[in-house]
View (tube, rainbow, N blue to C red):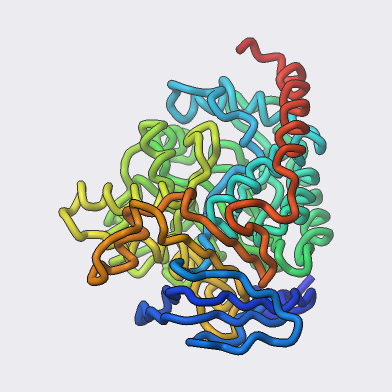
Length: 464
């Protein structure tokens, strides 16, 4: 484990497994730096980091050259809230609001996971993410099967923040998901000690309490102590749906999520709030942008009837806002392009055209998304010295063909899709080339996933 600054430790870790030198030749580089600089030229990668950016760069001896002509080069996309352990459950919980969705389908299905099913479920989701240009995920994890999920993240070579999904109580929670409080805390410490820094530093451990309704006061206290003592961030669901907050008030002496977190000291941790649909102006003074961030999940919030988060207000208050697809059963796709486009359009519905520009939307999945996860020193922009987590998009697509005067950030944010993905690199290693996975056998993943899913459904006992 690394005891120092997580971002700086991760920078050091990304050089521990040097990838071969790579030259991305002849693209248009959207750096997503503070000035949104656009550079026409090449990107040279050495030892997993960006070594140089500019025109006509010389390749290092033995370097691989990947064609990026007629292409955009930009930071790999960051999804700040996903449930890769739910990828198998796509389409199995339709037409339900949040609490019924959890109690009637999702929790029984999660309780039926074992390490084998969780491994192939996560690998399936990881393949979908990579093929869609996502290079970093923050995953809420699982209870049963969590080792399989973490092993799959390592084998996928995604950059990831992940950990056990922590629960010890709650109405409708299956016995297989509700652990003894002390045992849950001990298990997550053991997992953190084993997996933090795994995959040559690509996997970082974090604490994943599900939400207030499945965590006792004692569990929250233990999580706070671990977060402050170990330096692990806390990633949880909050203020997703009004019915959820009403249930929180009923069990926490009239307090909502933010009030409860303030009273229990959680706001003093590095806290990442998934959803935040119902964060109000009254909550904002209590949320310190140095510690608290929000991850917006627009498709999931629409599909579950939760509402539309006010991203403009959150950003105006200084909070870093990331973006995520959430999970396959509440979205059906793990597509970051679809999420960032929808995020911008929904803010225009709330605030008017231009309220969230194409550049703003792209930042949710790159530079600002990195800040929301505490990774801004490592990823999120194309700058010399940063990890070479990069995405190359073909411009030879009808939807990306436009007049030269069009802002490329707008072009990508409102028009790009996974069909334009040419190359995807993580720590300088090409994981997708010309739209195909390089190190994962997609056919084998689908075959093994199908077998594991069939067995999981039998174990779940659900009548589908």
